[in-house]
Length: 277
Image 1 (tube, rainbow, N blue to C red):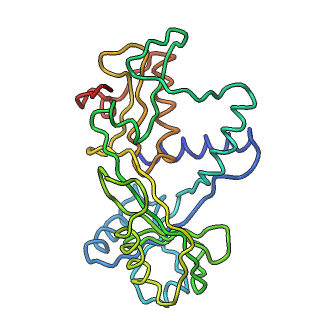
Image 2: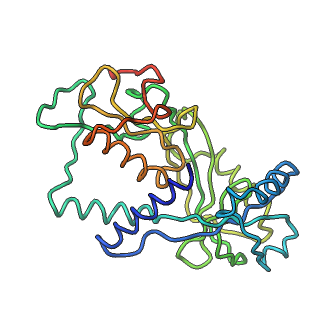
């Protein structure tokens, strides 16, 4: 469903930019290193598939060619300035009296609302059967000799930032982490990944971590909580929340307002719901 997700996301973020002012959503290209025979074979196969024509390019980069690594170029993608976008959205909602911070228990009776949507992310695993908190880590690094304007994907992603010579490098996966913060193990893994492709010295500016709400079948959890009325779950977007959320949010709102059916593949009842205690 990638075509539907991208079309919905690009239209939604363009609308918010017009409404709020500013630029937060940008088209990107991704240089994908094909370091293994299986990856190259899969790339060649998809290059011949018309369903992938929108996302595969024969474009070449002179600086990448110098690395003497086999690669392909992904097109048709976008990048959201998530912190900047969230900040302006929260400000807009607060200024217009539409934002209130309040914690509601799943079992709490809240009669004044027609519907309550629990979009709690990884912290909501105690009420979301099937949800797996999955920690990711990233390094913010200064790499003066790397001038590539595109995102690069090897074992990890290298994402150019606004600041000169600065890159976001990640990520790392640790399901059910004991500690949600940055770890020495994650830092070493990311440093090793950088050294595999970048042979010059680099400087670590920051080491960050976050916990994603993933689901073992890679489908989000969307719909009415089994056994409850007016209480809905909107969760499990994993690493692709900014891409998936606009489509699935519209899907859920259409269900609540118009009675449109929720797709079976995302309904939360496919897992045993765990109630908060």
